[in-house]
View 1 (tube, rainbow, N blue to C red):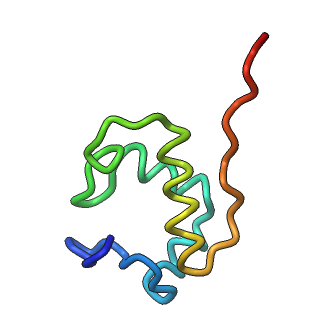
View 2: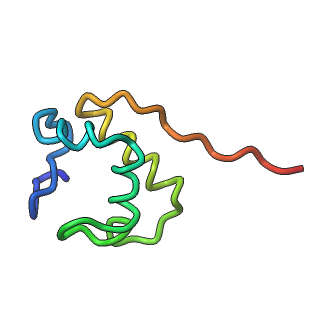
Length: 77
């Protein structure tokens, strides 16, 4: 997302992220998990769903989103 390769919205670019933000957090996370366009599933890496969701929140919020960062599930006793 740093260079906007293959149509990816550039990090921090509110105009590029605006239409995507309008789709909602769940849709953004789903695209990140399953892949979209030239971006492979999980951005091509091996990450937990929580890590992906936190990354989505970080990038979206840098472009004007107001998404809450997902919290880790409480540890079971």
